Every structure is written in structure tokens, then in C-alpha cells.
Image (tube, rainbow, N blue to C red; front, side):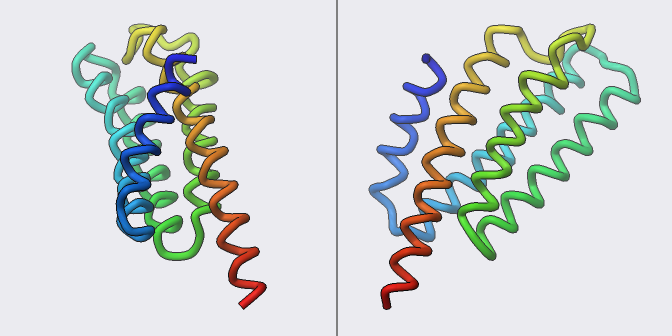
Length: 132
């Protein structure tokens, strides 16, 4: 619930921007969310293999963010939903933890809430385009 509440505040602030700028904020946020895991891996002295996994995640989420900006907010939604799964599944049993357990759970709530918002935004954008 904390993550979803933080997401609501994030969306409220971003919606004050023009649509393209709003989407850019969400794309930058996806990059930052993935970067946290790379920084965490470096901070705990993770193995080179673990660092490589986190860097691969950073690349994948960065590509999802860029694709979402270029083609559709739905791709951003999918990127955020995938990041929630990254939080919950990939990092559940990683030792040493690259982020605290509480962070993973709050982040997943934030990620799922933003993915839902972006999916709804994509549907509204598609419906509006079809009526014009």
C-alpha cells in the first residue's frame, strides 16, 4: 500500500506536465528504478555474475522505457509490470541482498500501480485516436 500511495503522488505530480513530458518522467523513472539495483549490487560487493544480471536488467528496462516513449504507453506499462516481477521474483533469494526486503515490496507496489495507470492511459489514448 505504501508503494501504491507513493505512486499516486508521483502520478499526480507528473500529470501537471504536458503528455509527452509526463511519459518522459515515467520512462526516466523506469530507468532509475533499474539503476537502484545496479547501485545496490555495487554497494554490497555482489559477484560479477550478479552485477551482470543487474546490468542486463538496466539495459532491458531502459529499452522498455525508450520503446514506451517512441511507440506506446502500453510498452511503458509492460516495462513497469516486468520491473515489479523483477523486484519480487528475481531478488527474493539473492544473497547478499542488493536492496532491503522492505524496499522490494514497496517498489513492487509502486511498479504495479504505475503499470496499471499507464495501461489505462494507453487504452484512453487508443480509444481517442479511433474516434478522431
